[in-house]
Image 1 (cartoon, rainbow, N blue to C red):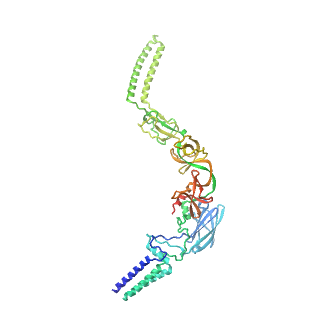
Image 2 (tube, one colour):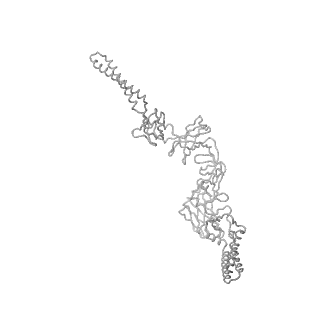
Image 3 (tube, rainbow, N blue to C red):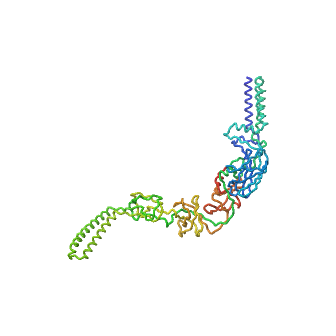
Length: 559
C-alpha cells in the first residue's frame, strides 16, 4: 500500500505543479492567445545605389549573391563586370544563369560588420558602390515555433534550443535524478513523504529549466519596421518589402518622374462606326419572299464587290390581283387574235392596192404593242427584284434564309469596308476642334483625326466624329472605346503609365514609390487623364521619384 500511496502523491504533485505553471505564468508570456509563428530573420544583406546602378548583396551558405539592376528602370543588368573588395582581397563575381552574380565568401560565416567596395563596369560605364554587410551571430536569430497545427517534436526542439546548453543539462539532470531517486526509495519502501519531496524537487528543477521559454535570452531584436523573412511581405509601417529575387519574378519596372507641361485632355465615351462613304445598306424596295442568287447567300465576313447580286425578292400577289391579271391577259389575248387576223387580211390585199400601205404598217405596230403588254404581265409574275451591293467591302450584318419574307425598306445586308473606320464620341460640353486625339481600345492605342462635330444635342450630348488612322485590325463596328481629346488649356504634372495607378480599398488612387532597393511605399495621388496610355499626376508625388510602372497591381496584393 505504501508504493500505491507514493505513486498517488507523486502524480498529484505533478498535476498541481503543471497547473500552477500554466495559470500563473511569469510576466511577459501570453498563454491565453492563439499560437503564432515566431519571426524568421531575413538573410544578411546590403544594398547600394548610384546614378546608374542599384546593387544588392545577400550572404548565404558561405556565398555572396549580387543583384545588379538599372537604377531608373529596375531592369536586371547582365554581362557586367563586378569586382568586389572583400576581407580576403579583390574577387571578381561570376555571372549565373539566373541573371545574378556570385562569389565565394567563406568569411561571412563569422559574425561581424564588413565594409565592401564593388566596382561595376558595363558598356563603358564604370561605377563604384560601397556596401556595409552585417552578419549577425547565431544567437541573435529567432527560431521558428510551431503553429497550432505544427509538429510537437519541432516545438520540443525549439524549447530545448531556446534554454541554451546549461539549461538543457539542468533539465536532463533533474529528470534523471528525480526518476532514479524515486525508484530507489520506492524499492526500499521508505516513507511516502520522502518520495513526494524528491518528486517535487525534480519537478521544480524541470519547471525552472523551462521557465524561460519565450523570453529574450540575449537575442538581438530585429529593427523596428524591418523585414523578418526573406519573402515579399507588408511591413508594420505599411511599406512593402520585396526581395530582389521576387522583384525579378514579378518583373517590376520603374521610371523616374520628371515634371513637364501638357495640354489638358478630356475623356469622351465613344464607339466604332463605319466610314459613311465606305459602307451601305442593302434593302428591299418592296416586300416579298427572299431567294438566293446563284451560289447562295453571302454569309457574314464574305467580301463582295459593288454591283454583285446578293439576293432576290419576289413580290407576293394577292388573290384579287391574280384574278385581275388573268382577266387582263384574256382581254389582251383576244385583241391580239383580232389584230393578227386583220393584219393577215391586209397583207393579202396590199399587192392589189386595195389597202393603203400606211394602214398595213399601223396594224403591225398595233399588234407589237399588244404583244409587249401581254409579255409585261408575265414578267410581273415571274421576275423578282435583285438586291445589289452598293459598295465594296464585307458583309457585316445580315443572315437571310431562303423563303424568308422581307418587309419593304427592311435591312437585308450591311456592307462595311473594314479598312475605313470612324469613331463617334459624345461630348457634354462644347469643345473646339481637337488637333490631337487618341482612343484606347483594349491594349491598343488608336490615333484619330477630327472629321466634324454636330451642332444639335443628342440626348444632351454633342456627337464628334473622328477617322481612325493607321492599323485598324481587331476593331469592329459598335465597339465601345474611350477617346482622349486635347484642349488648348495647359497644365503641369508628372506623366506616368496608367498601369502605375492602383486603387485602395477606399477608392483612393495611389502609386508605389521605389524608396530603396527592396522596399516600396504607397503614395496617394491625384491624377488627370492625359492620353490612352498615360495619366498626369498633379498632386501627391514630388519630381525625381522612382514610380512603379509595371507590376503595381501585384505589389498591391502583397500582405
